[in-house]
Each structure stands twice: as structure tokens, then as C-alpha cells.
Length: 157
Image: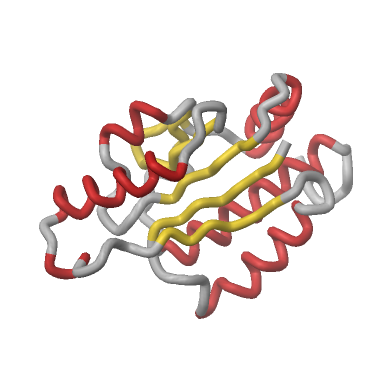
């Protein structure tokens, strides 16, 4: 199974980039891991939020394959603790999912057609975080889940 992190927005830079790279590299010891940074549509700053979300959704839906398992990150999704995330990832591996995609939406979130296509909608928190921080938290939690599955010492419960 391959794990992909998709994020709508600017390329990784700034305060969280080193951590994202580090945790992604660590997680790659368990599963092949890659990032797909989806650039916002042209003239995004001049669009209404609903129009921007629709254009982002069209791009995302075009990139997805029918057999991709899509996890959309959304504040209204279901929450999981680290152990449940580990079990969730293991269940996808047991189901022989080829690509497990975690999607971070754009500045205004994820449009309804993508949420409907998602196999699971996950909420990291009820709090709102900057995209760079969500990337860091997501990559760290996937790494943590992998260590839980292998009974390694990283996670202290």
C-alpha cells in the first residue's frame, strides 16, 4: 500500500517544512510515502469561496483513480485517536488498498463532491490550524500510527 498526502495550496516551506520532511521520511520506512501539493487555480485570490472550492474539487476529482481510498480532512469529520488511526491504516492494508490518500483541502475547505467521493472524512481537531501545521500534524500522526502497529517505543500510551 502507498500512502499519499495531498494538500491544496502553496509548496511546503516555512516553519513546518523540515518536520514534514522528517516525519514523511520516517513513515516511508513502513509504507511508500509521497506528497502531492496541488496548486490553487489561477486567480484564486479573486474568486468567491464557493467558486474556488468548486475549481479545487474539479482538479482533485480529476487526479483521483476509482480504486484510491480517499481520506478527506474536514473539521466535521469523525475523530480518531492515534491507536484508532493505526488500526484504520492496518485495516486499509488488510483490504489490499493500493493507494491511501489523505487530502488537506484549500483555504475554504473541501467542496461537497469531494467529500461525497471520500471513503472516510476525518477531523484532526475541532480547532482550525494553518495548512503548514496540518501537514506537520498529519505526517507525524501517520508515522506514530506506523510505530504503534510495530509496537515500537515512539508512542507512549
